Structures are given as C-alpha cells and as structure tokens.
Length: 462
Image (cartoon, rainbow, N blue to C red; front, side, top):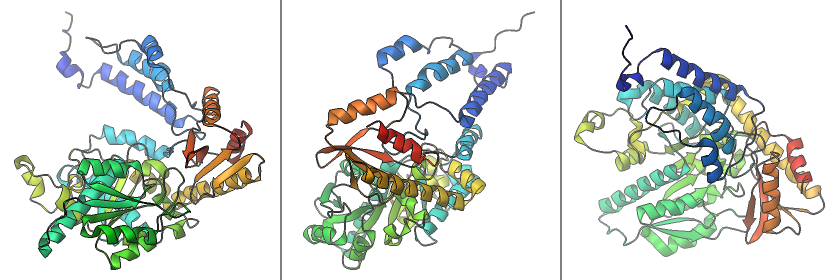
C-alpha cells in the first residue's frame, strides 16, 4: 500500500530523505564556494534579463531544492558582484576569512538566538570576549562593553540615542531646562549615517568645516560648542572616512571635554580597525577618551556581512536608553544578566559576532595585525607608483588603505566608461568618485589577497 504524502506542515521541518538531500546540496555548494580561489567578479544584470532567465520560482508546490539552487548558482549569484574578490576595490570591500565564512553556517545551523543571556549565554559570552578585546585595543576601560549590530548606520544611531538620553538625564538632575532643539556636532565630511540618525531622532546637525588636510580638529569644533552650548549633546569624530580614509584629530577634540560637557562618539566603521596595526596606531590618539565607538568587522576585520561592534565606555548608558519593557520581557529585564538586546535599537538579533570570534580564536590576533598592516603597506606602495607616473595625480597621501587619484584630463564620463569596461572585462570593480567637484577614482584596499601587480595592471588600462 502506498504511503500517504507527508503533510506540507511537517515536510519542511522533518528530518527525511528529502531534507538530507537538501542539506547535502547546500553544503556541497557552500564548500565549493568557500574553497574557490577563482570566483569571478560577476556583474549586475538588467531586471528584464533576470526576469527572462530566472522566471518565476515561487509556485504553489515549489520547484524543488535542486532547481532552486541551480537557479541561484547559475543565474542569481552571477548577477551579484563578488565583494570578497581581490580586485573589488570600490566603496569599502569585505574580505572574510575562510574560518569566519564557514562558521557563519554554524551560527545558522545551531539555531542560536543572540538577544538575551537567558537564551544564548554561550554565544553572548563569546561575543563579549571579542568586544572586550576590541575595547582594550582602543584604550577603553575594562568595564566597557556593548553589542554587535547590523552595520555602522544602526551602530551610530544607537550610540547617539544613548548620548541624548545621557544628556537629558544630566540636565534633569541639574534642574536645567532642556533645549528646544538638540544638536550633534560633526565634520562636514562625516559619514551620511550621521545625518540619517539625526533625521530619525529629529535633532539638528551642526556641520563643521575640517582643516585643509580633511581632518576635523579641536580648534574647528570649539566654535560650534561655544555657539550652541548645552544644546550640543554629542560630537562625532570620524576614525577613517569612507572616501579618503582620513582620521580626525580625536585627541584635540577629546581635550575639549575638559571644558565642555558632551558625549564623544567615534565613528570608526571602516578605519578604527587600523589601530591594530603599529603602522597606523598613532593616528588614533584620543580614542581612549571616547564615550562610544563603532567598528565594522565586515570591513577591515575580515568577518562576513553583517556586523558592527558598538562599544560604550559605560554600558549602563546604553542599557538605560535601549532596554525595551513589556510584560513578556519581565523575565529578562528584571535581572542583571547581560542581554545584547538592551544595548542598541533592536530586540531580536542574530549572534553576528560569532564568526569573528571563531576566526580570531582560530588564527590569533597577530594574524589580524599582519593583515591590516599589509593593506597599509600596499596602499603606500601604490600611492608611490601613482605619483611616479606621468599623467596621474595623487589627490592625497593615504593615511590608511584608501588611495584616491586622478587621471589628468579625464572627465566624469571618461571615468564612468573606463569603470564599466573594467567590470565588463572582469578585470576589476573600481568606480568613479569625486572631491570638491573634481572627478577621480579610488582604490579601497582591504583584501589581503590584493596584489601590487593587480593594481598596477589596472593603472595600465588608463
């Protein structure tokens, strides 16, 4: 007698022959992808072309795992640029270690919830070990702590929400009336996420023109603090700007805390990892006085998307600002246990710090220092090469690992056509940029597999 079909309500979750086949398919593909050394750059496709090639895949009874995975591998994935490719040099690349990428599978397979100590104490312990290590590298006290969030935008927003909450509490304790409008002081070249956070929080941004070098200095900030007084609840310093990799002069900004009352937040999403290298550590003097910092491991700490480490000097400030209260959460909020959901604008969260923890535990911190230093050396070397070539102009000497340069006489159209040709030929992904109205391009060098020869080869195409 034929066995009746398994109900769909259990078929998706039951351990069956079908389930084993699905797992084998996915793990086989993942193994091939992780161990691949020649994955192409790939490139985007037009929506009409994707619709023609992919068609419909969400049907009443599905298309089956084999067809779905084939659709991803042969149609959808090739329409996505490979961000860990050594010649992906645009924006800020990612270059996760093989250990971190592999362990990202384990995080999902383990059904770990990373929002509370009650449900995920082992995962939270491991994440907190990484956060404590980073805090120590940044010169913050042993009592510092925080949480891994989705990315720098959420990290900056969460830190600034805590900063405003702290300022409100201080004024209330002093019996001082709150300002009509709260204000954030930052460089005019600060990351766009600061302005985004201000819009969400309904506060104002006071943009300050940086020095000629592009770095924000204490002398630039002083006037804004004197003009806006108690309405300034936070000053944001950038530790490695996205466009140039410039580090603000954090020490001179932090020194103003001796005269003015403000929360110092350091946005180090890209560049703060540079503190791990002895070649760059001197650029970051003053970070140890920050009230909060962020750094994105999916950028220069070789973790997979998505992970931002948000660290508070006094974690209690974050907890007061962000803990959510509800009857069903009483069992969590009425304890002193460390629940990551209390330290940022989120509740449910993936234990996204675990791949970095596994990679650090596997390779050791010295491997990270060496890899970051290698990027800095390569940036300096290719900058020298650019300066030595006729018809090229280095816009600014790199501090970290971003190299911005011009091809003399080129228009925006020239850069765009050249960039498109590079990607079409699968040579590199290098996009046009600009500075003060002048078009240029840039190498963002984070991947330890990027070579000097690859970079000079790209220059040769110009």
